[in-house]
Image 1: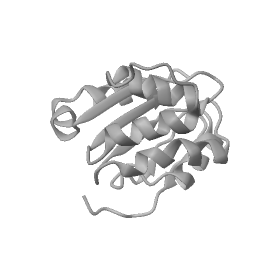
Image 2: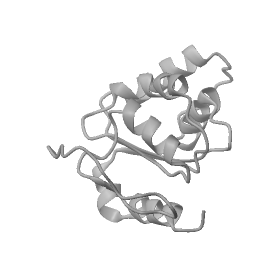
Image 3: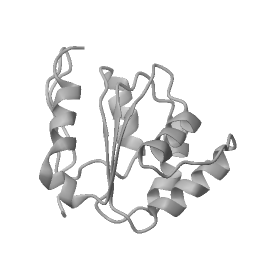
Image 4: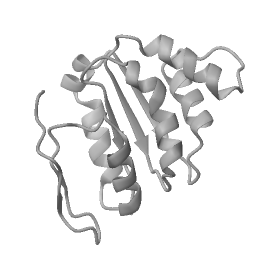
Length: 148
């Protein structure tokens, strides 16, 4: 830790151009255990969209899909410690309804988390090609897909 991952994400999140580009933004501090239901509820809450008491993940995801329909969003998941592939797939399902250009930024100190999330999500910034050396992580090149 301590190399500026969160600070960099905050600079992007708070930039006025980013503010203009995305219709909906959410910053989520993720605990050591990535809980899909908790993160979904938190997204609904921080965007002012959650005002009901639901514990059923399916219903929460339906509500999230309704709110994200045809909206371009930016979601920051800060401090992710684990990434079970099934959890990431489940988390991303309602997000696929968002408008083209929607993005998720994940900060993590674990290379395995970064790669699992990268391989499971269509929301990564398509023009961000390098995972810069952070701590002991080697520089890795990402696929060159830049259509936006």
